[in-house]
Length: 156
Image 1 (cartoon, rainbow, N blue to C red):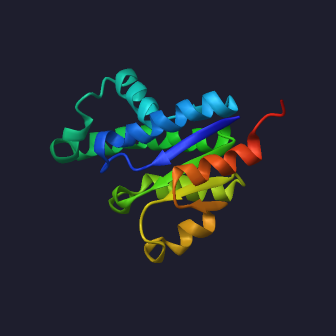
Image 2 (image 1 turned 60 degrees about the vertical axis):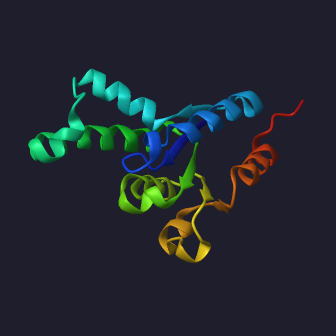
């Protein structure tokens, strides 16, 4: 099984790498599941396309910036649709200024991939669209882990 780790990057601390590392390790150790980590995947695309300064292009070369961001979008959405078995989504305040996670959740829903969302904002502020695209919504990673163990734990 392969989990796609969706969540804030553009406006998140360290592009949201910390929670992704933690859940990646847990998934491997407890369920023997692999992950697609868009932080790692984006870094690969930066190297492949020699785009180390792409964030500066937003103001210095908007067309070039848009072209490169489209490379990242295409790569991420192909991963969601063609490679992942399910999504783990961390929904926090960094998401609210971005768009990628919204699109990934919607696409996963559209192609019938389970979406397990860990929500850290007040429930009343969680988008009806996003919560409705989600298979399940959890208030913590511990709740998510218990649910994943129940659903995917291999028989011993």
